[in-house]
Image (cartoon, rainbow, N blue to C red; front, side, top):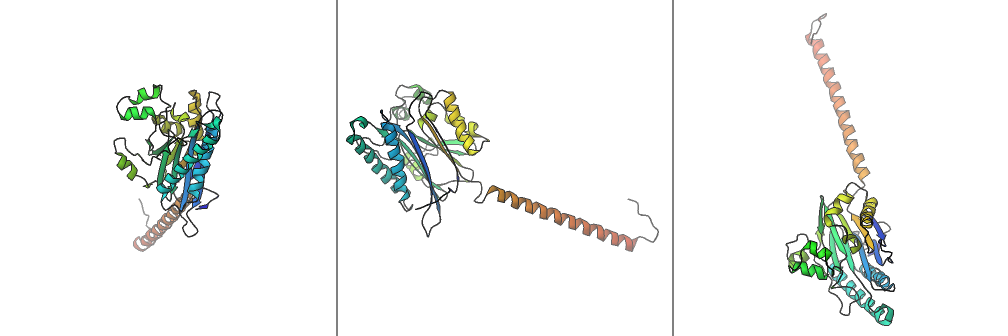
Length: 319
């Protein structure tokens, strides 16, 4: 793919270390491309990653995750996005594990990742861990990804309900992560309904995005303290960058202990600039008004001629 200087959609991002005085081990990246010299189809790739491990090892793992996955995606031809994402995640996980083996102080390092790849107007996703992707559409919020955590498995098996899961001591126990001894299987379920099967979720890959759709990628520093139902009211009516900041501010106001990262991608309402659309609309209004004025003048002239022909000289026309 060929890198573009500017994304064909609106982008905003905010990252914050959280309120516990921790080092910020979150990393993120957003890259824009066109598919090839012959194919001008726009492509945007976004990734967030939450590092795991002490002694700054999590920071190293997250940097490897973002840089390696983004690099492999950039070198692809965008024809088989899910295969490219699968390969990128597998290679990245092994790269992190290899770095950990080479340095005893980084022995347990790892990272999560949540990847959103928009090609034209079609969305492809892949995730590992508990970083999430949400879709905001028509004031509805859909969690597209599934957490790979102990409590998520407990909820799916009916052991815990959603509220119990949030308070459970194992809430941060991750069952799948980059850098694990056995390379993790990337999750390509794109869940649009809570009751759909895994097969249905996977078949949603390549879904068409609509003008006004908003994608939110975030780490668990946000979702630990902000419910999905609170996201849309928090960002409603705000421009994109203030909206991203508002979510981070809300998490900080609740003393979020983990690092917080928010990346937002907004599909423009039209392919052209909104100002152009507005200008075009006003031009039609002005032409319509001019037409009405000309029509009114014609009617007045016609009435005057009729009166001259019909009324006798010296008559007074009373309404």
